[in-house]
Amino acid sequence: MRLPELEAILADINRIILGKKRPIRLALACLLARGHLLIEDLPGVGKTTLAHVLARVLGLDFQRIQFTSDMLPADILGISIFDRESGAFHFHPGPIFTQVVLADEINRATPKAQSALLEAMEERQVTAEGKTRALPRPFFVIATQNPTHQIGTFPLPESQLDRFLLKIELGYPDPAAERELLAGADRQQMVADLAARIAPQRLMELQEQTRAVHASPALIDYVQALATHTRSSPRWQAGLSPRACLALLAVARAWALLDGREHVLPEDVQSVLPGVVAHRLRPLDDTARTDADAVAAALIEAVPLP
Image 1 (cartoon, rainbow, N blue to C red):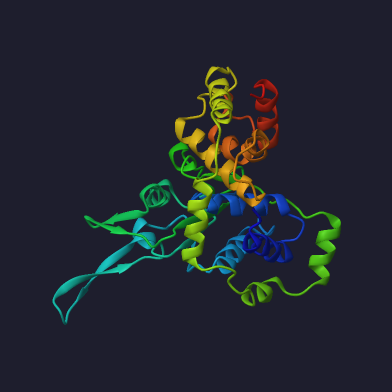
Image 2 (spheres, rainbow, N blue to C red):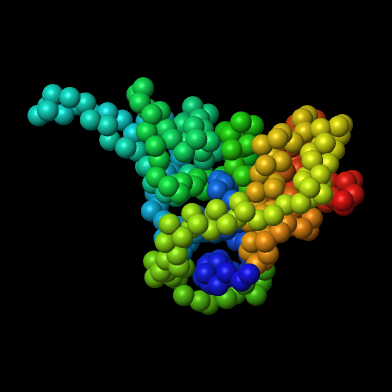
C-alpha cells in the first residue's frame, strides 16, 4: 500500500532540511497522528524552517508567534476592541486561529503565556472573554524551544509537555550535508517556491487512514508492558500515563502507514519510542539530563517483545 503523495512530501522536506531523514519522518508521523510537535535544539539548526516547510507542503494556513517574556495570553488568543461606530465590542482573533501555529521559542514566555495554548492543543478550541470559539481544522501546534539550561528560559510544566505528542531534536548536520547546505541555494527562497502536495481535506483523510491501521492485541500488550515498567521503575518520578500509551500507539500507526503497511509491528513502536516517552519521564534526580535514545534503549532492553 504505497502512498506516493507521502513519499513526495518527505522528498520535498529532505531537499531543504538536509541529512535529517529520521526527525523529518517523525515530524510527519506526528501530524498524521493528529498530534502537536515540540522541537528542542540549539538556535540555527533548522527548527523554524522545518515548521515552515511542513505547512507549505501540506497546503495549510500558517502563523508564527514569537514567544517573549512579556507576552500575554491575549497576544495569542485575541482581544475584543470597542468599535465607536457600532457602540459594541468586536473580537479580533489572535494568531492561534490558523491551521498550523508555530510557537517559536515557546520557553522564552512565562508560564501564564504558555498556558494559553493548553485548551487549544487538547480540545481544538479556545475560550476568550467567556466565549468558546472553535479552531480551524486540521489544527497543529509546532513549538520550538531552546535547551532549558540556556539563560532566559522557563521550563514547560508537565501538563504542557504531555500535550505534545512528540518531541524531537535536529542536531548539527553531518559534514556532507552541511557542505551541500553551504554550497546550495538559499533555503528561504526554496521554502517560498514550494508547492502544496496535498489539500487539507486530503490530509484529514490520511489522518483517518492512520487511525484505521491495525494494532493487534499482542501489540497493545507490548505498549502496556512498556508503560507498566516505567510505573514500577525506581528511576522515574512517575510512569507513563494512559495518554502517553495512546500517543505511542498513534505515532506507531502513522510510522507503519509511512512504510506502506496496514498493521503495526513492535519495531514501529520501538522506532517512535524516544520521541514519545523521553519528555514525559522525569528522573528522580531533577538535575539529571535525559537522553531520549538512551531512555528508549533501556525500556526496549527491559521489556521483552510479545
